[in-house]
Length: 333
Image (tube, rainbow, N blue to C red):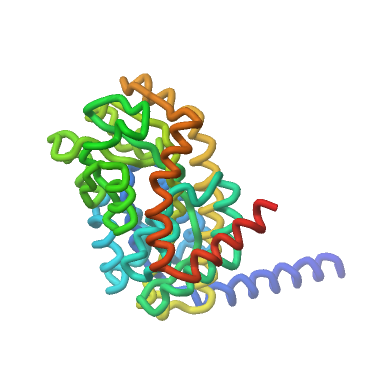
């Protein structure tokens, strides 16, 4: 009888604790907008985040995911997030240089040698300090996900050497460093919001674009692009960000639910992205893309060509570059 009473008491305490934990959680619905379509690793991560938030909130908080740029391009979505009409987005961290110039460091070519390096840096003190800088811009940085290493596609010719890139009209993420590195290769940069890229390629308003294999595959660029060059010239961490205007209305319990889910879903998303990488190239080949890969000598030439761009933008950013390089030096030891 005593044991039964004790078990009942423990159960009652646990139930009371659960109720107290959820007492500060209101019925809420959040919108999460992203650029890539359903099935892409980022969309899968967003779906996982929505599931986790639902579970952790006891079903009180619902997240509606809007993939494929249906809420607008990245800059439009960030503006809506600052205004509080969209609560969440996940995007290339470098795009946030339009808000805080230091974020351009995430778009430096050849900054990260591999995903392990990137994880160590963005998940550590450096990544947190960067996200903290967004608060004054009405943005709360909660976690880092990933897009991966970028490669070059075009519809005109095979790319065997750095010199072959010259003359191509390439879509770039709309920020200064991406414009400059394309110019440094003798190509013509065309800043363009991501939802417009497929149509731009199809109409031949642009010759090509550059993105990780997952993006090229998920967005069916093989339908409008023949050539793929494996360059791995840039690694894109993704910032999972929340509207500060809305964040400031959440209780401590609600903030913890959302923040924990963002980190947990991020770990899931990275693994999905990396597990899929092995098959993506084969799928693109089967879709008809002709693939070339730079020799070590051409890869070295590409680094040399882009070094002045890194120097120029590194000088403009200042101390943040040294901080990042110091973190990388620790990791590489």
